[in-house]
Image (tube, rainbow, N blue to C red):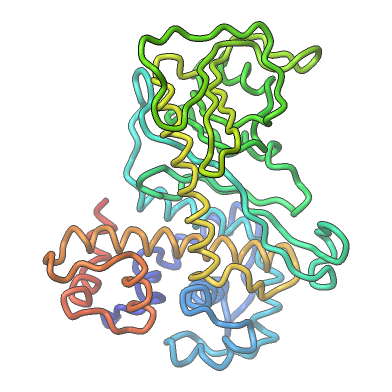
Length: 372
């Protein structure tokens, strides 16, 4: 194959077609397509996400120009409806395993953060009648865990829009990291489970402001609080049936608007300012959601079935993981005078206007990736 810096060519080198075959066998899916295969659909969804195509009809006009096998929009739609989305979910996990730095088992206290949250992609009820949300709206959720500071995608699962975030949290947990989450994940009985399981799950999770503190004990402190921290105490959480069995630490601070932010944690040896700093990093996942919605076409769902919708979303996330790796390795390779921001790299790559040094890097980048 002639070397190219187009996304589909890089995808073919990083995830060749033979990687799909064992997954399809496990899923008991037989690809009967000849003119347009499952692998062709995978490449189409990758380019459609990267170039932000408007749908199957728009993609039909652009496929040939992007080096993809051309078919009509009805063939695209039928194939996307037919192929189990679990295939693309597994391919995304293959890419995560290939691209993310390998995490060794942490002995002692983990230092890195696992930031967890969900985002909803909503449309009119007529398009997705199988997943109503409220009124005339329908939608699906992506429940995501990212590694803080590195903003690497770690785990993802999917649900319908009505599913509570708490129900998917167990699929995102990893005791090698400190879990950081918002109020939707603040169930007291789960805190007991995190504390008592064999590999303790450390966490910093925001509580509802009306949470009851049972038998609170202020923590000793020789110096006044700094920053936005106002209180630091140890207590049981909740009352009656919702009362936690274990004691947890509660740190209360003020947000920039003066509203209280109540944090629960089992990190008893951190300073309260350190706990506050950990929680403030939760904002990184909001930035991540905003970026993928703006740059990977995620709000523009092409199909109307589970396979079509979730398949498109998982390929888009796979593209994010690949772009992140290409950018980080490129930043470490090119001369400092050619450095780019991630946003500029994505924009110029999409327009095929990357500086020469970056284009040279990309022609050799796949060899670097496959040696990881």
